[in-house]
Amino acid sequence: MKKRNVILTVIAASLASLLAACGTAGPAATEASTPEPTPVSTPEPETSNVLVAYFSWSGNTAEMAAHIAEQTGGDLLEIQPATPYPEDYGECGDVALAERDGNARPEIANLPENLSGYDTLLIGYPIWWHTAPMIIGTFLESYDLTGVDVYPFTQSASMDEEQFANSMAFVADCAPGAAVHDGLFVRPSDTAGIDAYLAENGLAAGEAQSTYTFTAQETYFQRDGLNIYARLYVPDVQGARPAVIYSHGFGGTHASGSQYAEELAGHGYVVCAFDFCGGSPQSRSGGATTEMSIFTELADLNAVIDALSALDFVDAENIFLLGTSQGGAVSALAAAGRPEEIRGLVLLYPAFVLVDEANSLYQSAADIPDTTFFMWMDVGRAYFEPLLGYDIYAAIAPYERDVLILHGDADGIVPLEYSERAQETYTSAELHVLPGAGHGFYGSDADTANGLILDYLNSHTI
Ligand SMILES: Cc1cc2nc3c(=O)[nH]c(=O)nc-3n(C[C@H](O)[C@H](O)[C@H](O)COP(=O)(O)O)c2cc1C
Image 1 (cartoon, rainbow, N blue to C red):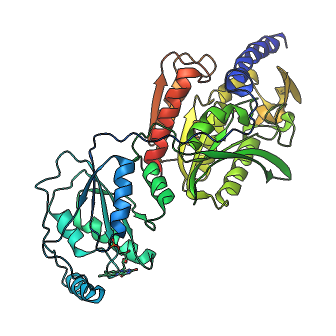
Image 2 (cartoon, helix red, strand yellow; image 1 turned 45 degrees about the vertical axis):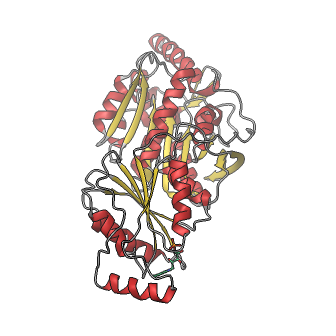
């Protein structure tokens, strides 16, 4: 009994710091109020390795290309046919149809000798006869595009998706070796859609700057009859956006996520930060702290994923989970449970130590008291019991997509080795160690974390 008291004191001290680091104290822990929309900053164009090449007969693609070149800082090249197409629509149609049916490669008047110096090619064209004009094939096949990132952009009279898909297949066929990314198919006047596409693909110049204003909204989701309080940060842009769900640590609240949420929303991501049921005495969600465990939190997170995926401003194909400390462990479990739905996973100092802590506290379930008072927070048997003998690493392993893990090498609560083991457990995980950072990222560590998270999100959004 005496021995247990000593251990409890040590663990309690640990958790005291854990609580502080997970959002109930520290610079990021102020209770959020509705943020003012952040100002839009103007991207700084810079000398570019980006080429924006396009063919346009009547000017619509040219309009898109000009905007794209401006936003990316890329060089602009209009592909001009050696033999101009007839100005008459019908006659032009006849020529274009014959070219398509003959899989022709019409000559280009101003073909650059090479594209050296460019590693990114945005290739624009109108839909002609349900696919790309054949002159696009001439252009692409004139170069070895191995390793070049190619981003097609197009539009048409009908905006028919199948015709767009045909054109994408044509571009891919004509650019063997290139990385042909999902293309952009919007009307030329939809500059918000164009900008969103560029931002999602990391193509906007001045990418490090905020480019979106956003609005914060409060809402409630439900799980097993309990309310889950959530704060949504929604970029002021039309259409469905990729989304990040932030899970807070033990004893924390949604508010600890605001330093990430505001940054990510400013870069075009919908962010949902919520309070776990019984997650802390300050939780605005239902449930008691004595009923909380990482598995009730897992159920909460699954309910949030379900609800968020159904919102029309959320792109359900691009749902990312971001969790700190215990919220990281819970996010890892959620990703493992629905690996096809979760596009990516970011873990900040995830608390995989919890299992070892529970096992060192209690030999068996019979040893666990009904209620244990940790700091100002009662937790129940439900918290410790399922952790006894639990293999959390086996549980998270089924998530095989890329995982980003950030951990400070001065973390006194969750030692770095727990993230090193997670990295080894995952099929594909990158562990960034933040020198000197403790349990909780503040100041320049938070800035570093935000930069790494954004890079990861931008390169994993499809
Ligand atoms: C030769 C030709 C073929 C076309 N074929 C299609 C087509 O298959 N589907 C479609 O929706 N629009 C088609 N259009 C319409 C163009 O895609 C549309 O007018 C587009 O905005 C033109 O872009 P531009 O101004 O850059 O040339 C065709 C236009 C021309 C001239």
